[in-house]
Image (cartoon, rainbow, N blue to C red; front, side, top):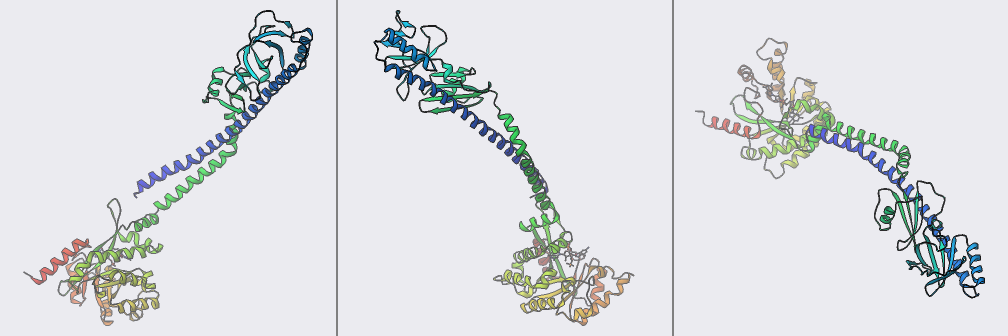
Length: 517
Ligand SMILES: Nc1nc2c(ncn2[C@@H]2O[C@H](COP(=O)(O)O[C@H]3[C@@H](O)[C@H](n4cnc5c(=O)[nH]c(N)nc54)O[C@@H]3COP(=O)(O)O)[C@@H](O)[C@H]2O)c(=O)[nH]1
């Protein structure tokens, strides 16, 4: 993934990471506030139902008492007894005796006009017949709720079906199961009430409670949810902000890690972004290309190439050099398999890290990679810098094993590190590669120019093959040839090439030597 992509994704994640906990906090606060509000409205609805049942209970008792009267209907005694019932029952406003569907008498006396019984709109579960909006015979006035059983009917003021102590901003309605309004408090909007009874939603806090044959509706147009949400947020918001800060911090930390050089290198290893270039190795006496050094390159997703000296130190320090070496081994076998099978004299030299020289781990990797390829182990050289040979005992073991397996082992960048003669004598090496810095001084007046012949002599005395690194001029090549140096590697011959370019170079070199004309 490119840097820009990581930054874009990290920014998006950070914004999300901040928004999510804050939105969750807001939602939770609102939810908790809604729950509290809902519970409050439910309690009011329950109180409304209880109040309506008290009035219905009063009506039922009055009707039962009237039914038990034995005096002749509408006699003076009967009318007096009805008056007593009316006076003794708190909720009822009036009581009337009916015969053949006509009102005959009330506590006020005989009814001489024709007053018909109003139609029944609802019957309660215990058999009380209810009619709403009855205008009383005696005083006219507001519509009453009529409740009848057998020959009697009582009238109750609708207010008695909803009169509970309630904040003025909360509205209450009680109704029968089929939606006939019994009583209301604080003037609820009839249209809103009808919507709620029809099961619709309204834009205010509300509660509809169905309790057997009765319904209570509570509406709070100026609900306290906003204020309650604010109170809940005071508790929850710091937690949300803390989580948001944590999420943003986490995203920043992860993306910084990802964007750090080490993070990018890890990603490169995971995505197998390493390829190998090959620098030809030339036999100075004949000019024959006898092999190549495998040099790793980091090919970034945008196509750019990162030089090894920019990432090898970090790879060595972090241990990532091990999987990188493994990728190099795999690539070398894949790239060079056919050309190595075809020419047994050709070799490829692979750079091995100090850590691998110490442990010998890489030998198993090379062995596994060679298995079934028909490439001879002697066609794979292993190169390590002097730093790799610091732990001389461990190095000796690894070199011995490598040589027993058939590989040649070279000491790379010789002269730049800690090597000493005794050191070199103690290691069973095959090849010594003289560092470019010494080759650069050949044919110059510099102080180190006088060292180069001694390095060559020492290598010869130890019976090591010699490779001169960084040969850039014909004069250097002539000098090296004159001093019996075996091989040369450098821009005079070729820079490091891609696999295809190297194979083409090698084939052209061989063709030239078979047919020098
Ligand atoms: N552990 C591993 N180290 C590796 C691996 N691949 C490379 N390396 C080491 O990285 C260092 C830099 O390598 P690179 O940039 O590939 O440079 C090599 C040559 O291109 C360069 N060279 C060769 N000839 C000339 C020349 O004539 N002039 C000139 N200016 N430069 C030249 O030298 C480098 C080869 O060096 P060496 O390995 O010492 O032979 C370098 O230290 C590599 O070793 C890897 O897979 N693993």
